[in-house]
Length: 138
Image (cartoon, rainbow, N blue to C red; front, side, top):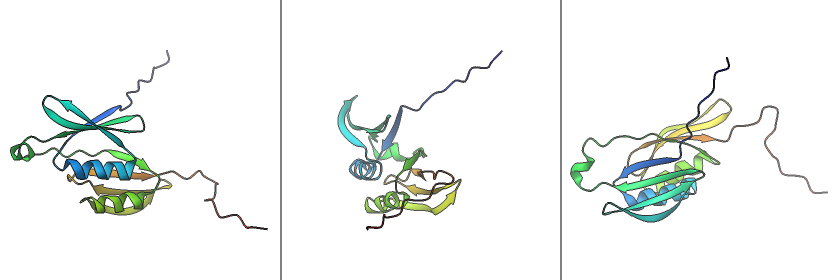
């Protein structure tokens, strides 16, 4: 009997955020997210799309909500790891680990404006395929 593989693609990720404006700016710039305002339970939230993933930023209501704040660690594939790191710096985040090459792709870890760790993965290189080089003019 053949075993059936089950998949559960991630379709949404809700994050409780402290610095809403900085978080929206960073995720928009670094990952191309487009956010809209959504009112939920009396809270003005921001929902954005990154590919097929819906990212939901829900504000922390009070300073007490920030105590024991859970640390989230999503990982995103980006076209330019160094540009995403620079974006984190511009919006109050930081580099967590310097970029390294693993499994044929550049990887790094950063902190977003709220301090969550984010893993960054550059596009994988196809084996035997060279990076594109400018064509010579004749």
